[in-house]
Amino acid sequence: MKRIASAVTVTAVLVLTPLGLAGTASAQTRYDNCREAFAVGVSNIPAGAPGYRLPLDRDRDGVACEADGTDGGSSSDTGSQDEAVSSSESTRPDQVEVVPEGGAETGDGSTESGAAPLVAGGLLAAFAGTFVVRRSRTGRR
Amino acid sequence: MRVLHDVLRTTPPRATIALAVVAAVLLALAAFVSAPSAAPRCAPVGLPAHLDRTPLPSSDPVGITVGSIDACSSLLPVGVDAQKRIEVPSVHTPEQAGWYRLGPTPGELGPAVVVGHINGDGRDGVFADLDDVERGDRIAVGRRDGRTAFFTVTNVVQVDKDAFPTTAVYGDTRDAQLRLITCGGALDRSARRYDDNVILFASYDGWSNSS
Image (cartoon, rainbow over the protein chains, first blue to last red):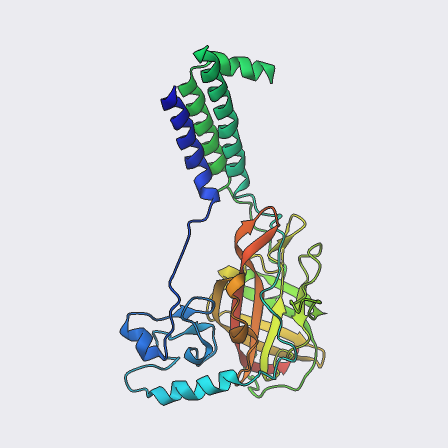
């Protein structure tokens, strides 16, 4: 009977796993310049990712330390250029009058059908599971 | 319910489990069947032979077209709410894009920002396919002064809203730039909210008088 109960648990876990997000813990990383990033094999850091900083995104295209060299940091580059951009970061931006906080709430998920069947499947498994457990209990009597 | 209960009672437990697994797998597979795409509805972005690359003076934008994903909309001016978060057009009109009026106008020096829903009220939003846009794709923004500003996509990134790259999006730029923002990533079903934003960065090609 125990084996059945654990089988139910495994089923539920297998079905429900796609719903949960695997934890993606990543260490916060800071690179003083792109040469430093390249030296440890890091390039093309997207905006929002750890390690992205505006001074490392010279062409302001949302990707820092691009492998194609458009953000500087090649061997011919001097660190002072990175520093020059860095100092401008600290000045308050004035092209945008009011800088909003955080991201934008642009959607209610109402066209998403992807996870719903998984939820239904999970519920079905849980539903079946309760009957199996109930059955095992009555069987014990 | 009673019948189902009796069936389950008389069915061996392993068969019940197998049944549940099969049902779950079938339901999951059904999710991968996607709806057919609709016919094009936007005029193509035709790039004029001669573009004036100089930045433009301020003039409110009136419409935007992202040709590669057949996305086009008029532009509703939006500001910030009491919490200083960027406003968006109503989720009940997801086809409507919004222009951030407290920043530069498209074609003007600085980062012009346009927001649009990925979906709303059970329909695709104007930027439902924003994450399909590729580097090099063209974007046209019509302005009230009769000029059209053209941009080329330099990057599309998906970022956690909790780590929104505010400076990269809203920070000063050396030329005229454009950012388009929508939602993406995992959906928090109870809050009806997405975890991520998809952000498109585009640089200015120049302007021409609207054809």
